[in-house]
Length: 97
View (spheres, rainbow, N blue to C red):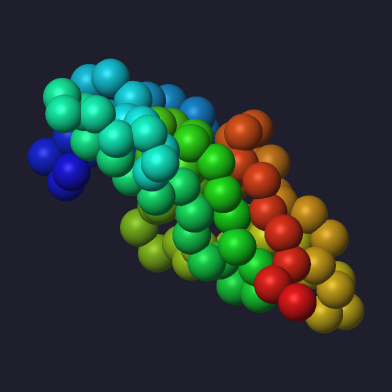
């Protein structure tokens, strides 16, 4: 899996750029002998984020010195939304409670 990730990614890579060097991977639950399967969720701060774009597109939360939780907007401890400058469309978040 790690060999599929582009090696020229930097903090200035545009949000939503291709993350992989070849065809997108299939989510778990759709295995195939000639394709790899991946999970489509991560824990980010007080919530979790899902979506195939987490593996198929570059997200700013993958940048050097950036925390996964930096892509989530909180106000007075209340989860408001995903930060659209940090995560591309196709990434969904939900509260963990």
